Length: 88
Image 1 (tube, rainbow, N blue to C red):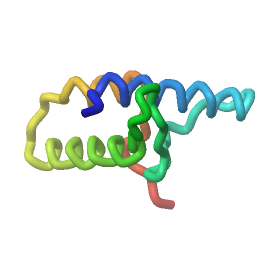
Image 2 (cartoon, helix red, strand yellow):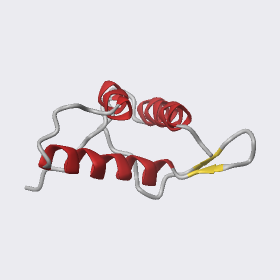
Image 3 (cartoon, helix red, strand yellow):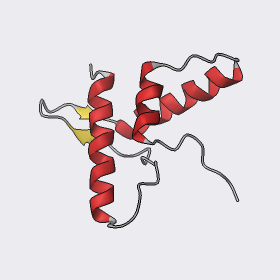
Image 4 (cartoon, rainbow, N blue to C red):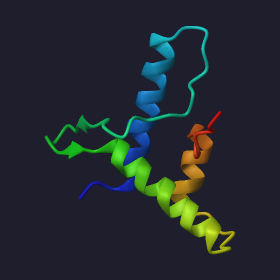
């Protein structure tokens, strides 16, 4: 089982790599749903799906009127995750 901290670390790595590939641009907060990595132990971490699940949990929490964010949600906020895509 992959713990939340491992996913958080992989998102931070993704963000850093994105910013290195796009000099002068700030990360847009997006992690593709298909994004996955192989961890040192050979386990596949489906990072994009994990982020999507937490977006769904956050949306449900807000809809239910619960104001208390999970630790994972707080960490994703700190990283700068884009919670909702604004439609033009």
